[in-house]
Image (cartoon, rainbow, N blue to C red; front, side):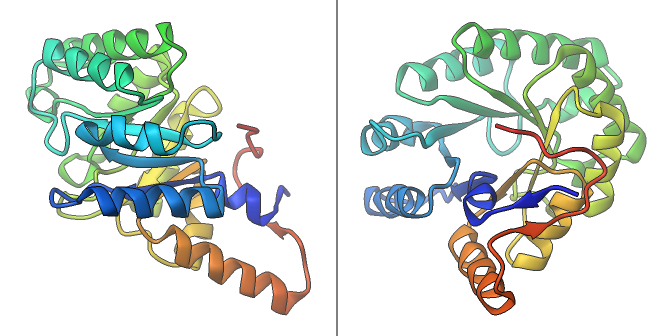
Length: 245
């Protein structure tokens, strides 16, 4: 059973502020908190990439740009342009939203082409690529089909949600996604994950990254739990081995 230190847990968190009204001071706070807690990444809207990259220069904390967010309803060419623009402005992780209209049309050839082009663009520049499904709008069969495409194309992560849909992450969706991709692709859970128990339960279900705006509260609660239990690690029973990132 894998055991996790506080830093292990922190490095699974994408520290998130995707609010449309987030100002420069909010980005500064986000980046400062990410450095203090050693989070893996700050997750921001594409236009914030340069500012956050400047603030995190010289650290090992990534800048994650959200592409075609939150609806996914832009062309492949548009998504590719925005991805390249984000990378040129300092983003070194990309989270893009799939074209849900084409999923509903059953046009999986389009979805695969989109995924293939964006993953290739990212990987050519050594940038991880995460594919956001937005599961609240999908059937289980559609989630499974998207995961099957991902298993073939091999983005770095498939992701449950934007956090702006009708619901966020669900444990059963993470388990389904992970059952399809196995260790070929990692899973990111995001949307509505705001407390320590939920955080741990999504890791147990198979998530290797958690997107949340409550990372500070989660880590502080984990520290207190470990202090009270007088332990330096927490064991988490997972269906798949712990992945070193």
